[in-house]
Length: 458
Ligand SMILES: [Zn+2]
Image 1 (spheres, helix red, strand yellow):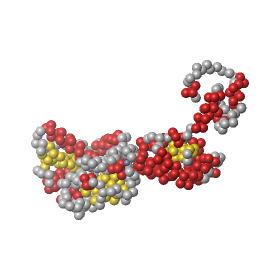
Image 2 (cartoon, rainbow, N blue to C red):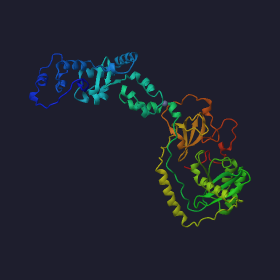
Image 3 (cartoon, helix red, strand yellow):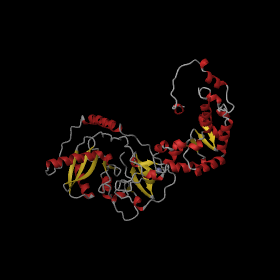
Image 4 (cartoon, rainbow, N blue to C red):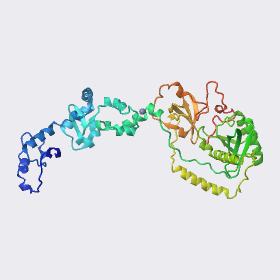
C-alpha cells in the first residue's frame, strides 16, 4: 500500500466514521467480483479503480511463481506430492478447511495443525507460508544437498534452505544426517578438555611416586617425585635402557623405601618386560598414563621442569640429593587445599565427557604426526580405567584416553580409508596393543606377568 500511495501527495485529516462516505459505502456495497471482501473491509481505499486492481493483484499472487526452483524440480515436487497419500490428505484438509479440533484432523496431518493458517496449496504444490512442503521421497536428497558443503548442523539449519523447503521435524532430520556424516566425523576439531581428576594426596611420604626421564645438554636424567610432599630426586643415567632406570630406582627405593604405586608415561624403558619384572619383584603397582596425554603424569612433568631449571642454573655436577624433604606434618592439609583450589580453577574451563559403552562406534582423534588430520573410525572394546579405553580400529586394538574419543552415530563402519590414514605409529597416542608385523617396540607388549592392559591414571 505504501508503494501504491507514493505517487500521491497526501493530506491526511481525521474524520469521523459517519463522514467517510466512500469508504463507508464500499465497505457495505461489495462488488460482485470480490471474493475476499471481508479482509478488505478495513482498508479504506479511496480510489475505486485502485481498489479493483489491488484485489485482482491479491488474487493473482501465486507462491509457486515466487520460489526459486527450476521448472524441472517443480515438476518433480508436483509429481511426488501427487503420489504421496499423506500429502494428498493434507491437501484435501487445506482445501476443505481445517476442523475446529486437532483431534478431528486425520492423524497424518496433525503435525501441520499448529501452523494450519500458514498452509496453502498452489499448482499442486503444498506450501507452509512461502516454503515448499517437501515430499518424503525427496527428503533424503534434500538433506544431502543441505549438507553438501559439510557445514555443521546448526549452519545447515540456519541456511537459506530453511526459507525454501519445509517438512515436519526437518531440524531433527538435519541434525541426524550431519551426525551420521562420515566426512564430518573424520574431520572433527579437538574436544573440550575434561574436568580434572586429581591424584589423591597419599597419606604418607614416598607411598606414591611419579617417574619421568628427560634429556638436558645431551645427558639423560631420571626424576622420581613423591606425591605426598613434592619432594623429588634426580639421577643422571648412564644410558636410557630399562636396566639403567631400574638400577637408579632401586637405589632411591633403598633410601626412601619401596612405594606402593609408581606412575609413569609409556616410555619404552618403563613398559618393558624388565621393568614389569622389577615391579613384580619389588611389589609395587605400576600405573601408566595414556600416550600423548602427559597431563596425567603432571607431577613428574613439573618436577622435570624444576630439575631442568636448577641444573641449567647451577651448571654443576648433579648431586643425587638436590633438596631436603619438606617437614611432613603440615604439608598434607596445605597440599589438599591447594589441590582443591587447582581443581576448581581447572574445572571451570572443562567438562566431563560421558562414559562410553562397549561396542559403541567411536571416532579417534588423529595423532599429531598424522597429516591427514582425520578422526579414525573404531569401536569401543572395553574400558581400562576411569578415562581410558581400548578401541578397535580396523581389527587392531589401541588404548586411548577418553578425550581423544568421540562417540558417533554412524552405524556402519566407513569404507577402507586411503593407506596413509591407517598408519598409526607405535609411539603414537593411540598405542597399538596388537601389532601385525615387525613392530618390536616393547611399548606394545605388556609382559605376561602383568595384567593384559596396564592400569592407567584417570
Ligand atoms: Zn559432513
